[in-house]
Image 1 (tube, rainbow, N blue to C red):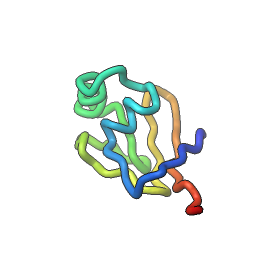
Image 2 (cartoon, helix red, strand yellow):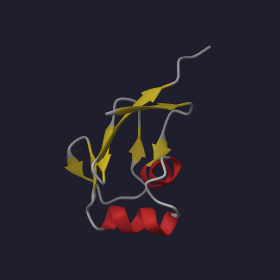
Image 3 (cartoon, helix red, strand yellow):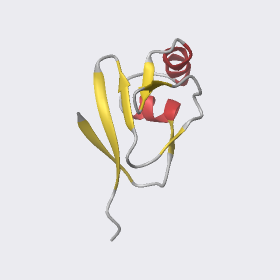
Length: 73
């Protein structure tokens, strides 16, 4: 599982998929999400605007990510 550090409090699921290179465009991210191919914390998530927060786990295309917060400072 890959740890991904956020420097913001939240990130939208579709933005996260693009940021991590799992989707080249917002349209591709939307298709993955609507098709039920993205799991958040072990559950299928079909809302592309779902807000990810530190502690969330995302799985797509066999890749797993753990969202973490960048330490303040």
